[in-house]
Length: 151
Ligand SMILES: [Zn+2]
Image 1 (cartoon, rainbow, N blue to C red):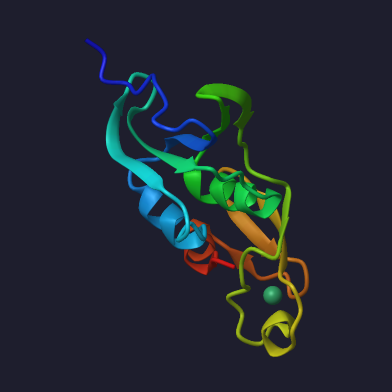
Image 2 (image 1 turned 180 degrees about the vertical axis):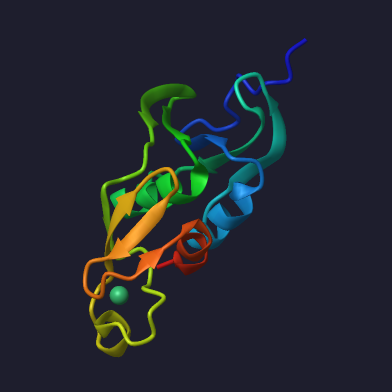
């Protein structure tokens, strides 16, 4: 008997699947879901990944910025848009090439930290790295994850 979740517990909303194990905690931190019903599975058995995290958000779709956050933190997550208990759309998230307005530069002298300027970064993969558009400071995965903020 498979322990994979096949049936969505939500009728309309968003399912974030194939999240790296443990990354759902950070997801709850960076997505503002306080007004929504959220079901979270941590370390759920997965045939593809061994273990994974999975989240179901009732009655909520995600913005482009939220998708970028999930792409950076979630390690190849899949976002499913659920309508009438069925998958209406599926997005396989890869790393974005560029992100804007979702994280802060770690360089305290960066102009984005001194003035009210939106942070902008180019993203490189393997290993994951973000380069500030303004001061060219490079940030590794740990810095990226800890600098991603909720709105
Ligand atoms: Zn910077």
